[in-house]
Image (cartoon, rainbow over all chains, first blue to last red; front, side, top):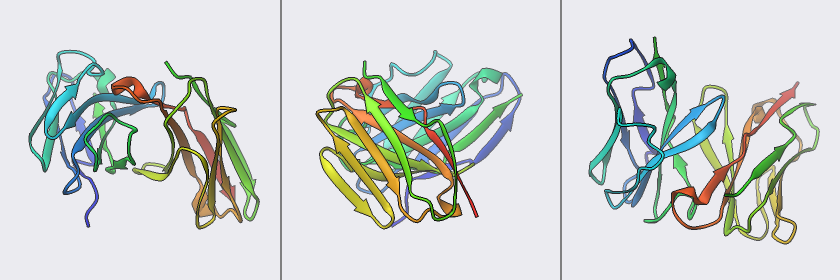
Length: 117
Length: 110
């Protein structure tokens, strides 16, 4: 069975541009998590969904960030407009259980490395 | 909020050595996760445990709930084990319930 699939793997863009990161969770998984990883702060939870419903977005840094999960097999994380401080690796993870992160094993994607110039 | 500390931060060892990475946390937890991240790569879940010990190949994870401490051991280490190892403590609740350590950067030299 395919794991969590993220695209693009690498994105280089200029400040002010819109960035859309995509995630396909493992089929049958009921929770999806978006994380951001930086050298300074490590892994930070941005938002998570249970059964396609956003549960907690308190980790989203500001209004420039938005996330959607229109169906069980697809989620997007959008940054508009992007800034250099958004440069990071963004991970999507899913879990078979509907619940907060950590209550079950986490299955991560390969990550999307974003560079904003 | 749980405070999760890992030690050492960096570890360089020779191939074949027995490796131990430590993780301590400040608040009682329901589960502890060990994750592996290769340079430039994705994150792989190695273990999720709430008590005792788990083993998978050359990897062993132990947890002592009373002492709020977990260890990850690698036997007969190999250069392909070179990676960052991250522990994460789950204390329940909502989004704040999972706290990540800063990771241990392991290099195994041939």
